[in-house]
Length: 188
Image (cartoon, rainbow, N blue to C red):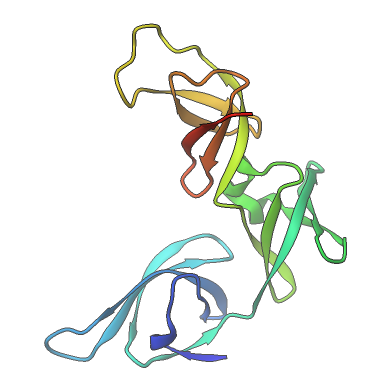
């Protein structure tokens, strides 16, 4: 479907040079001299690279033909992660290269959105926040109570995050999957 730059919004998936990209930021600019333009940041859905791209106002772009399907993560078989379609229960292997950094917060039975482009899975979108259990963490030093002091902690998925000193092994915490940052401790 042909789109105009006035249709741009965050999250819009467009086709640039035969590859699917997603708009993560856009700004309409009307300089004093010359024609208006749209400044954007776009992320390649195939390799995750983000670039700045400028479009002339009114320029036509094509919407990327991507399909988003809700799927459940089942397990990792050593070569790829196995996901099950929530509608027809079809199981699909997705390679570790496609999953990339998302693997560090991928919990078994987690519901994720898988993006398909030309019938192939190209990206997964985790929920914005996940609740994980701290598996390994050094105890906080008694008396070290100044604000914003953190320590590294390993969570059940293997990811290492920075947490406040009062967090202990066995605690459940909420983590922002977009930044990998600790949000809060979760009471069981």
